[in-house]
Length: 273
Image 1 (cartoon, helix red, strand yellow):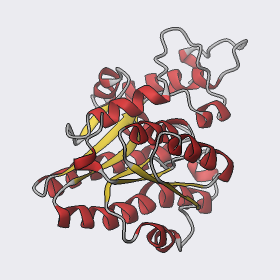
Image 2 (cartoon, rainbow, N blue to C red):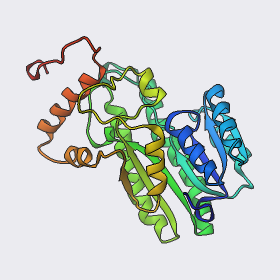
Image 3 (tube, rainbow, N blue to C red):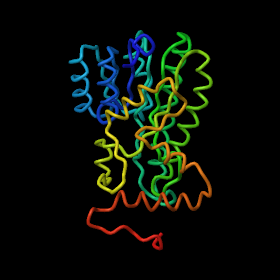
């Protein structure tokens, strides 16, 4: 169970309404840690808040788009005066699914602002307070996508690569103040967002993690930073970090294409790439 004396009495979860974010909320509530939950969708947000309150903790909610220029001031109106011992940034998403050069640069900027700029703003604010108190934790949710460039999501993959390298440097900076930093790298996880994206979860040999399992794994390894790869995907992350790059990128591209094919469609041959 997550140590309330280290990571409490309050935790802030950005992207805390469903999927892995909701699982973080429930597990932290079980540990007796009060919650500030931030998400765009009020329905799932309030449902998750009610489940957490039923576990006996105080919960504050903020329906907010982190791309709003006033996001951080709005968050501070809810959190100033609270002793926040844990920040979970789970709000990364890919709203851009086109080839880069034919895509809309405004949408590209939105991917960067959510996955990088918003993450930096919250980490800067809450990390400074934890540094002063000399305790706490910052958990940044990453993705296997950040270990390799991929077609259609090249910007998202690059943003996730930034997050991992940033977490490593932050881990060095804050570790001397007893503040733990961890990037939790997720693979394919059975979340509402992935289901809405139409990803096939039935491919033979595909590792599909459950939200509660990866959230629990992340909380259990908060002190084992700077990077923890969840769901038995460490081998995949290591392979994606290797060389030669062309061969690895092409192989991963073929695998990712199969995730989006309808169940009745044959997989493309290697010669069609």
